Image (cartoon, rainbow, N blue to C red; front, side, top):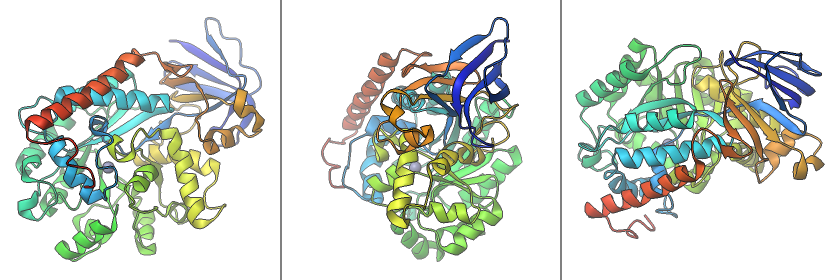
Length: 461
Ligand SMILES: [Zn+2]
């Protein structure tokens, strides 16, 4: 078993007091000790000098659509519904090769921003285009992140009153079979798991009530978690009121979609009562501020949710609704959004770090294993170089969260294994990964053109 000793480092463990100059002792994939002062002498240990560095838990991303790496920069000034309507026809053309290239680039980019665990929400499965779910799982294995892909789905196309064109939706029975198969094939419930599956119908405006209730029953029978988009825009609220006569959270309650095994993306438009229901039922949410800003969706009531005891994690959301968004940057974005709306005490740097780590781990049901630096937890650790330019800021957590530019990432460990060192991926060739992401974009646009989509027609929605 390998031993790593990180020394002379400022430790922000998220749970428990910060340690201004301390050490972290890792054996295999676990943290076995941490504390003030120098590290013990351990024969054969790898020693990492953390002088001028801040150690935090690895960041946890709880909402994403990795395939969207291949469709960035389109419909730049559209509302969510306009943007979706423009892009469904592009996404209908994707295949496993597009997903592999897009997911690799997206996950590599996340790792470079301090992310050690990411979820993904994949909900479009065009027929005859390869195994898209397997492709993103393979990409995560290569990059070396813990991965929580959610088998998404849509069964309510335009002919049924939904938003997506019928060509991108699946039949209910096909969805349930494929979702059960994904769980049976891939889900690893073990403590140090690097791969867990969630069940994730897409959104209230693209999914039937039957799919929501059947999906919940399936997930609960298999002991996996439930995820979907909720309360992202006021357009969605109007859609729900018109079609089912209820606001989104009330509709979820009716469908059995509240509880400690559920986390929602966005949750922007919540009433006080909705927030209390989230807190009472243990329902989590993934705050995606850049995406909400890009699409003009609104600002989630994060400070109020935390004040009332509802769990909040962070998400970068799909690459195409956030555009090259880093997970470390979402801490800053969350902090600034709350303060711009609610004043300078609305969210502290340390609260932003907590939602990016422990809040995310709770969303994924992994708070016993991840999300803080504690003895017995998995050694998922980000080491930020807060010396150099950032050294004029005496508080390293402030330097990490407030700065426009992320401090250099000296080291990123996933289960004690190095994924990033000195701002460069060490598990895969970084330049090749970036190039493959660009090729995925060109391939997708080519495939979409073959199906009649012409670039430019999406502009302005
Ligand atoms: Zn999303």
